[in-house]
Length: 69
Image (cartoon, rainbow, N blue to C red; front, side, top):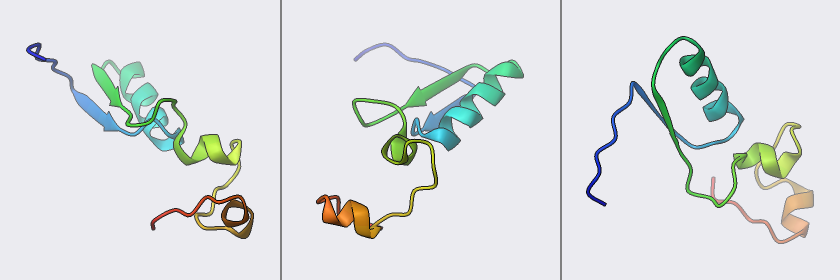
């Protein structure tokens, strides 16, 4: 990649917190770039369906989801 991008705010992670920060900053006039490593946005919020997500909870572990914390 030879292009250079510039921004006022670089948000790492497109979960609920990152997207809230990005939208708020953009609303106030900042040029924002959101970087996400996953194929989809949402982070832990996508796993939780929008509810509170507690890593390594019994339901997730029973389903084979074992997160590093």
